[in-house]
Length: 162
Length: 170
Image (cartoon, rainbow over all chains, first blue to last red; front, top):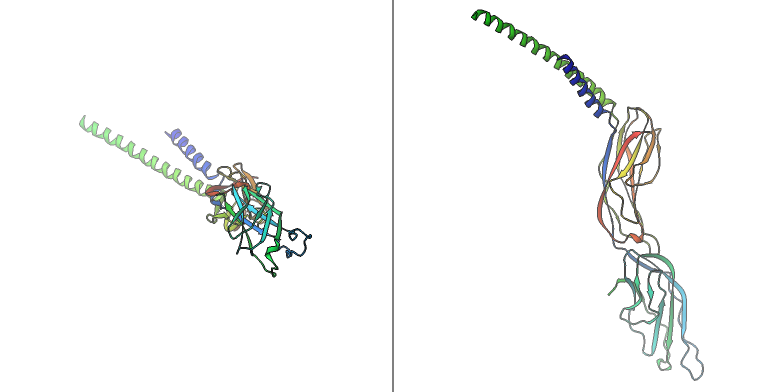
């Protein structure tokens, strides 16, 4: 009986002590999430586009500007960049833009800008890139006459594929 | 005979009572011993506790052309009590993070110990604080989390990981 009591006691003690000296730990629950992110910005405004020359017998010579760039970050897929003017250009004038694609997209080439959004780059995948070229071209036919200095706002937007 | 039986019965009952008294004494002795040892054991056990859970870590912005901006949380703390010798704190998460994301943590070290700094958590335990001296007891030590993701991670729905901090032999 004494042996049984002693053995039971020893087992109890070992069990209790074993628990007491076990390595301690604690936990925390960390909640995380990545939202849809689509950011685009431009380096600034292009220089003034002034049509001021022509070869005799030809339409006035178009002028270009390729001094600006854009940056884009998106964690989406099949995104596109659209471009739109705030209002239509004067009659017989045209403002075109070429937006170079980032590493994951496809450029649409030179696109005439209007007051309706047009695709400039398509099939853009996840990318974070800056310094991507933007090139403008302004042209006018003789029929446009003299056009006083004016401005248009060009809006570039990262959008979902249609 | 009846008297003899009665006497024998009394004698047997007396033995049982004595045995019960002995067992009671033994039980009390064991109980006292257990309480003593348990109390002693509890005092000897290393202990770490966290103040709660950090806030949600949600990446929702970036500067165009740059990587997604990581987010951080430093609202929680931990208490530690070491009585069994020089120890360290390790950290791990229950399962691996999604591809192209990283959960990092930095624990402020108790006095005299060394924080490893910001450590990327994985499903394998890693050292976060080392060289914690015996008899260290300190509260309110900072826990800083940082959650980062590259654009390749895509959109990641809200999810949770369990981070386990463990005191281990140094």
